[in-house]
Amino acid sequence: MPRPNATALALTAVAALALLLLRRRKKRDDDDDATRHVYRIVLTGGPCAGKTTALARLSGFLQERGFRVYTVPEMATLLFTNGVAFSDLGAGDASVLAMQRAVLAGQTTLEDGFRRVAAATRAPAVIICDRGALDGKAYLSDALWRDVAYKTPSHAANERLLCERYDAVLHLVTAASGAERFYTLENNLARTESVAQALAQDGATQLAWALHPRLYVVDNVGAGFEAKLERVVEACASIVGLPVLPKHTRKFLLNSDPLPAVFERNNVKTSAFRATKVFLRHAHRRDSTKLRYALPPPEPSSYANHAYVRKRISEEGSDSYQYSEVICDGTERHERKRRVSKREYELYLRDADPLRSPVEQSRLHFLYENQSFVVHKYLDRNLAVLHCQAARPDGVALPPFLDVGSEIAHADRVRFSAYELATLPVPRNATPQGGKRRFLPPASSGESEE
Image (tube, rainbow, N blue to C red; front, top):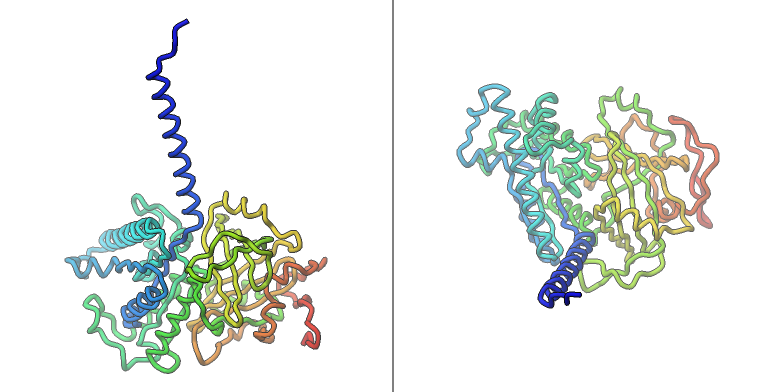
């Protein structure tokens, strides 16, 4: 019987060892990618809204707090300031389509490149996009936009997928609305809009981003431009999980479900999706010395420190998944969110809290008076809550076409939180859509249901 070739055996062993090391390294990289998140925030708005100044302010604010900050320039401005002229767009729909396809393809390619570089640094990072993929919608008819969004070569995508590229959108309202004396064309060579055109463009841009669940509209109401910038910074801080005073999101009980016909009669466009939250038994302890959450050691879940996963189903039926960690430190609430894959979501479900039921919600997003509203309907609990995410200091302009009840006080934030609602028994009889609300979480001692 011939003896095995020693050289061949040695080469086989070396190859097997190299393959094992490669697999381990790939798994480590995959694990890192699963826990590392690069925030992508769109900074958009109408002409002369203060985006350039806000971009600089946000960059400094985040860098001072340990984030790597990357800024993606506006693709349209790059084209217009490097040879493209407005007269080039006067040859009909073909030239407009060519321009917008170039903007969309270039914008997303730039963003993806910055994302890969930021992720490779393995440091906390934020990418701030000077406008984003959906801004082009504000400049086109619905028919042309569908052609751009769905038929751009090498970038066929639907509108919601383009929207979900970003963690949040900050829309700065043009100075032509509420601060007319400061409206100028001098600080942007690509800007040519009159006041009336600026107002129309601002409204169209808000509608273009109305699908995004975290759209913050920052208007010019208040104590000047500095106050506007402070509201932008505070909104950004809440997005990336930095401490921020909880004063911009206000919640109101709805006495009845809003029917679709109500919005149609008032010419208010809406977008909707369903979401399921599953709370986990354990939450990761916050590492106070770093800007990330340390994985070991986990601790038992509580309102002050808990985690959950969310499955979101869009109107088109597509699914997306998210993991969130919540930590309350005194009066401050920190929340960090990241997108996860379906496989990660299913792995997290193994740690589902047996003392809490999944929370089923439908969410309805709409804009009213430069404010972003979301109706949270708890499908199995006969409860609806109106959230206002407007960052304005003079209060909330509530939609008059909704049957809005009392505001949820700060002292009741735990009682009406999804974390606590998940522990309550589910009512047997649900109220039909449009019916009156009958279910409220129990009041604490000394409180009245009124």
